[in-house]
Length: 389
Ligand SMILES: *Cc1c(COP(=O)(O)O)cnc(C)c1O
Image (cartoon, rainbow, N blue to C red; front, side):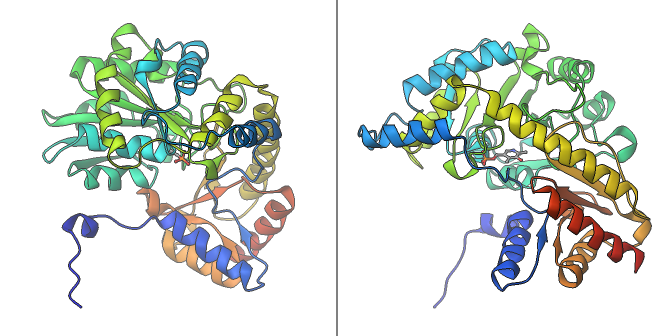
């Protein structure tokens, strides 16, 4: 049979993080004792009151098609959250509920980007950003950052990357894969460049609730009135509320953009699962102590992991202030990131993600969204691995 795939498929690579997580899971299923640090999701169950709200909605018959942009009560609750948590002046007409933060970003690229458009993406980046830009026909412009600037793009670097074709700048703070958090002053400085160049910024704030050591999250849209008019916010429920499998996210921006995204969504996925949206309402309106309980668990593991990694020869890391990842520099081992991760998984049954997946060599990402026992066992094995090199 002669199957001809569309050209757009050839331009994108499958998600390396999902592939490695799958390999680690398959090894586990074979009965191998795998320590996995590859996951990009909390290891906690969704809090009980959120599950209860979705169950109740299901029992009450919230099982039919709803508006493509989301249940009005949820759009309202998200607008309220953005006003009170983030000082962003949005109403329900500025919000669309999507099938996760990933879907928000994809829909945005489809609504805004076309051939000839450039999108600035600092590296290390979340794996899907460049691929989404390519799927929309645009050109990702990768700006490399290093450990020396804590893997943050500087205002000068951003300025230099801007051309007449620049449409969008992708900002992710707290960041996956590095755990870096831009300080309010750094956000202000980037906002000034965005406003001056008259481009748009898409601010991926999915980790905003997962912060350590007094780090502060400032949405770039709240940097100034002018910045607000150049900002689109993407977020979701997956990370803060341990709701990865629910597939619930949102995009916030100018009503005209939200309308366009809603049209695209109405012809692709329609509304997000109706009863799941009632779980999201409970997440926003219910008690927030579950978020803090999970954050504190992450904080303990983070401290333990940093100490363990720093005690190993040949490994260095910049201390993360957010999310649940440690980005480790493996330069001194002399191994390429893919080789390092492949050998570590095959020989020691320890799963990590190679930095090359995020656009930087000589680094690996270790997720600490896993229990303390696994962290201790896994880091002992990692120690054996690096000492034998
Ligand atoms: C997890 C993640 C998302 C979105 O996840 P969803 O499950 O689609 O809500 C978006 N951006 C980053 C950086 C992430 O790590």
